[in-house]
Image (cartoon, one colour):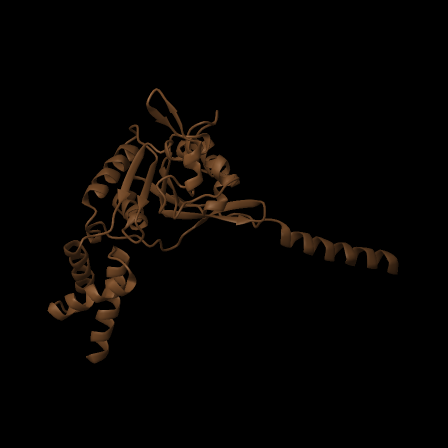
Length: 288
């Protein structure tokens, strides 16, 4: 074999090695009988479902102060896993009040009935058709979960989500629902200048086109659940439940410090309660 041919083959091998780094890895075959949750992992312009070995499932009983929201989402999910009509759900409102924890708790509550969870980042919502194709025909029920969802103007994921929710001729498969959480009720920023677009007709106020466009996405979620900051009693109840779970002691000093912690953090929420409980129980553990 000539030196020129050897040189050519070596350069061709180097080129193939470089190209191989750009190609998406072969996705593993998911055994949904064993796997309860997966994430959509993007690789350049492609993506694949990757199993989550140990999903962080929240205990249903540990969620306090949101009983109405729990009952509504649980009812909707029970309809879904039993093959009955159910709605896509939007959980919106104050930060740290249990929106994403509630979705993960629903998985733990209904996993034995065939419920599975797929987590998708906002930027990857453009891949929803590929996700739908990957789970079509599976004998399980899938919730596609997008946490902390919000959009800016001209975001390509915005139109992709609208099409899958309601508007595409293909639509979503019967075994898929979308649960999303957001701090914004309408998922998009709202500007004061948009009020100037409103018109008055026969004594009625009609929103402008910009406002109507923003409302059109949230309207595609059939179930809206709103979350609000906790009052003082509910906050302390959550603190006590977390402190007990972490092995700490409950008393008047703990309650006073928990309220001071909430003031320092700028609000009362389940997240703030859990953070204080970890700090309190940890300090007690050091003293022992």
